[in-house]
Length: 386
Image (cartoon, rainbow, N blue to C red; front, top):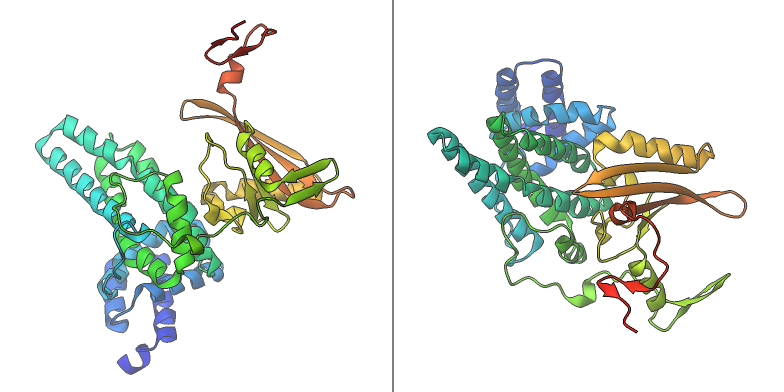
């Protein structure tokens, strides 16, 4: 049996069959024993390939998400722990690992506080763990974007859904801290043993440089990057295709690239354009963006830029715009103390052909507070002096 099983394709098929038994209601202990008997060892790439095949075969993301912790438990004992690839200090993978170490420390501190009944210490540890959102956002928008370029979409679909589950558990951690702590630890295991090895084996130097460049938008979780890694500027992707002195000819005038960039960075709204193939083609960069954006999302399917729970809404809007049933969709939310308006516009050419969708996000907090009139010139900070 071992001679037959010692084959990548056969191992993946065998794991699919065993995991299928788990989804059908098989006891985890029985499935784990069968896994150890038939699949003597496997690595992260085969587990990812197995889950990708399950999704390609029609398994809903929600079902895979609901069972992925059990997948991890039954495959953990056959997963080969490959030596961690060495990266320089400050490399995105180095920072990611150090954040996970800090998160492990916060989990341990929370458990120690629970054991001795120290409510204040427990609250502090749980507050530290809330910093995990920065870690997850960087993973979801920068790491997943690069994986998808290489045709690896399963982790972004399933892990993002699990990230949201961890976020929700942490928000309720005051009532049930152990469930949140266990969920954080389980995700750390998946990141360290599956996600990071896969990224280190897959990403190019250019992609790591891109992730490094985009990472400050999301911030750091409990630790800051160390000094050391700094990509060669020559390999950092340059988003401006025009030379500095070259102008764009438009029907109503001409703009140089510096002027155009200046306009986009000055507008009091955030713009994101998704093309007719549902891929992110452009976003504006202002100093006070409501939602962080990374250059890694350029070319990414917009459905992959949203948590799985909201993809149905995204698909509905795009379908309605593409068919002409609708041309505008609007939402307004309270976000981090700000009142935010989010509008989506169908973009069409002169003949009515659908070209894509424009997202316009604006912080309306100050505008909602305006009253009366201002008819005299006055700058923020005081009236104009004669």
